[in-house]
Image (tube, rainbow, N blue to C red; front, side, top):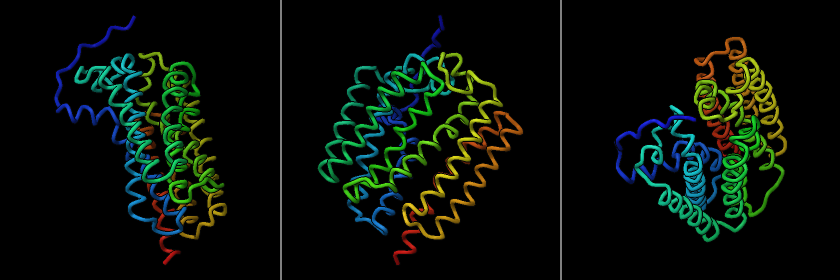
Length: 299
């Protein structure tokens, strides 16, 4: 039986505690993939209002999903160093208000996207929340080493939302982008989980680095990174991208694979965190190049 640590005194305002429930840094990362996808779908700058409403709806949907995740995981969050400062662990917010807040965000997200964007985008954003909560959080996270592999699909849906917000439909290009994010997620998250593998073991969560050796995890990271690189190159002809994107995809993918191979040679927490940081830079630069490619070609 795990001993729960004592609650710490709140050190932020109530509003800040509610904001923390939404995991704003994760929301930022999701939106980094949404807006460039809109640019590609529009083959140039989409209407500013459309971008604003899509970003707002996407942020609300992601924030609601993250808050529900914290509600469900509050028992194991108190056992992990990385998560013991979350509002439901510290007691800054009680579970019932937190869940009500999360559901309200999801309802608002659906209303915003349906009213200001289109129904397909609203349905896609809601489906991502449902998948994240029911498939990843409630089922796979505590039962399978494939938790983040399958559960990561929820984080790939924003590219579908971005594309459908502009076109009102889905095509092969956003499907390939969906798979790009789907494949990027496991090596990105496993790199972080290497540092916090003791946390996952303490909470009995079978995240790969907590149940497999560092070498096994590093080999998986290399394999997924190589596949990711290939998929980013496939996206170029499928979406009709130009030389700017293709060049960026080649260089960034090579750098990512080189970093992953360095982790394989030096499977340490320090190297894993460098890879984790690079994975965020990588996806930001890749999608930035994607948008820039379309903006330059559209001039």
